[in-house]
Length: 68
View 1 (cartoon, rainbow, N blue to C red):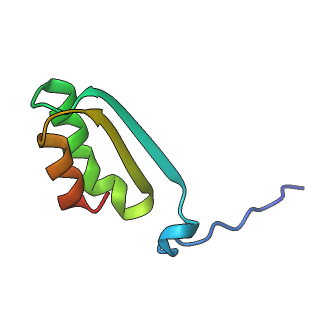
View 2 (spheres, rainbow, N blue to C red):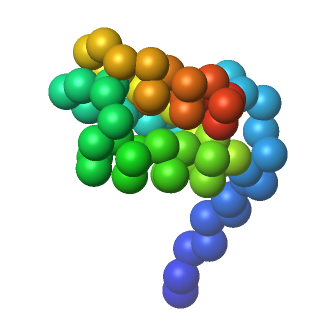
View 3 (tube, helix red, strand yellow):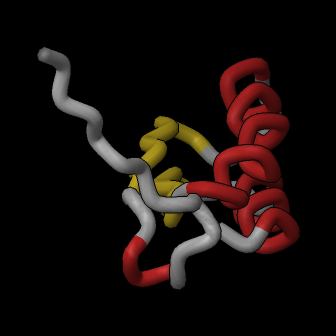
């Protein structure tokens, strides 16, 4: 007999959501930074996202816009 696990909806309060820490070497415009910036809007819908990067305003602005 299989056991069934009930999954809670992802519209939980921010404190209850799973956390993701994205670490990027530099926050300046580049390939990895652009990729992370494009992922942020989708990730922030279901996760509490923190972005760690050194310098540059590109990722800071992208994270702020996405709500990370």
